[in-house]
Image 1 (cartoon, rainbow, N blue to C red):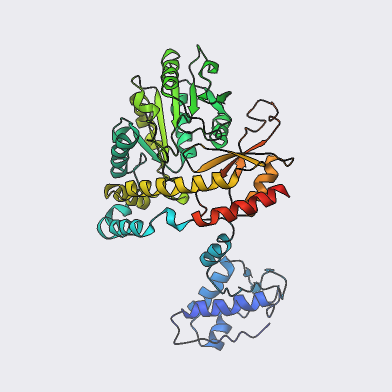
Image 2: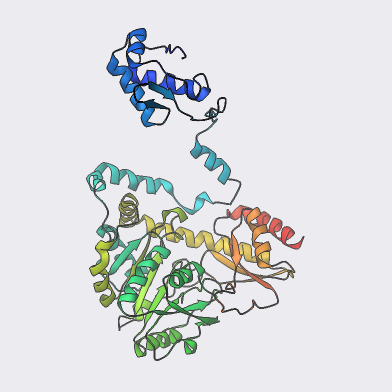
Length: 466
């Protein structure tokens, strides 16, 4: 039996029983007290240390609960088999905090442009929420989203996108994918189980519909958007479209085709899900009004996001439901909790109320227009053929290369540039092979600082040519 002689510090704020617990635990972990070795009895240890029986018993009880020791009836306490002696984990001292290390690891990985967002204005709104509205933070957020933010969104959408709605029609969630999950429940309640999607289209959303058991029909996208004549007829369904800037082709649906799409929805008693993810960012001419603003039959669900116009980690998105679908949502809203931070929702409401959001949009349009012109000029070679979409955060580029899309995207990521294939996977294309010829990619340029674009593109082209 090993003698237990802890150094009890009478000046420490740590209770005596925890000091004794620390000593015995460390002795067991280090192997000083061997597995199966008997510990002194409560009475003998109490007497030898000059501590009360209660203090020793509390220490032993804590050790037993955590599995460091065990008791045998009528025998006493013994060290348990915790780990092999000599394998004590040692906490490595860090030169910086884990948060600092994350930042250090992220900086060289991908480009980011601090000129894209004024965090000082955001911080002012955060401070105002904390100092003046802190009582609101002690309660959970409205499952539909904070009323103050829904009001600001409704006001902004009418002014900027021609969307006509009330705050009661708006639902806020953490990203388009989370809102799409909400939509699937509403569509099922409407007995809609068939979805038409753009081909190529936004894969994460397509996957959600597939995983929720919807039948999916991919419909090709042409120069004027989705081919309306190929949409399902005589069957109630829904179609997911991005008419103002198709995500993988840059196609823009003209006004005549928009009315055709609305007619299709009305005649087939169907629903249009309009993903307007970055339409505010149009750099030449005015932004094209939203499809929802043309709808007089309650056929369009409007989806928007702040990730492109604020910063990606904000993860606040919203949908505007037609009145009939809004009524269905009200019946199921309390089955779910809000997934967006209440603090961020209130901060964004203030940010919009003070006009900071609108100012930021104007700044981004000017900055991104310069970036777009610069990257188009740098990419225009016999090796690459960029497509000017005049909007959004990306440029579509066709590359004359024997490398496949995945290899080209990996090389872009190695230089800190985000890229992904501008084609649908085989699983969505119902087994159809990808087209031959130049490899189409979607290239994100928005986060590359303007002054760095020429050098970044030069390095990228060198890697792609290698």
